[in-house]
Image (cartoon, rainbow, N blue to C red; front, side, top):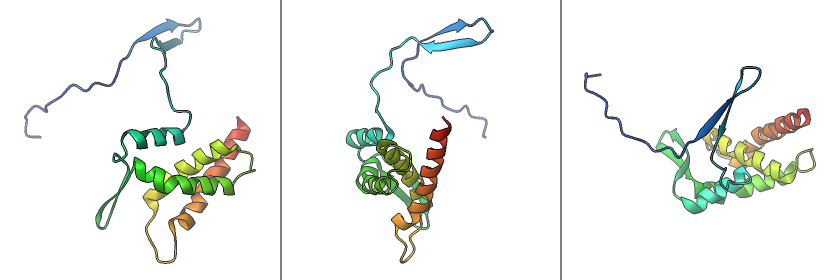
Amino acid sequence: MDGQPVPIRAVRLGRFSASAQTQGDGSVRVRSTLALGPYPRSIVDALEQWAQRTPDAVLIADRDNDGWRKLSFADVVERIQPLAQALARHYRGRGIDDEDLEQVATLGLCKAVRGYRHQPGKTFAAYAMPPVGTRVRSSRSAMSRA
């Protein structure tokens, strides 16, 4: 560095208030004193809420040879959600309920977007199917252990 002080600006992260209680075994339980506000029921609901609030905000970005590939919240809901629903239908009846399947497929597809490079004759859906299937299988085994 050049010896100049780095400017620091205050960043508001939200309201915080907590209480701490020491347990008999010496551990400390820390709890928020604020009530939990409304929250989305699932990752799919959260994506849809963000797509409504900030449709153009970037959710996924990745460099390629031509610069940046970007998908906004609205892009993800518009392009990926229908594919996630189709993949969830494909894996139906394998020990995971439909809503959980859609969430697993959505997360798998969001992750697959970053690794996908267009190749003639290979669609994104064909590329994404194996990793989403792997996620479904690992989710099913995780749920059976729980």
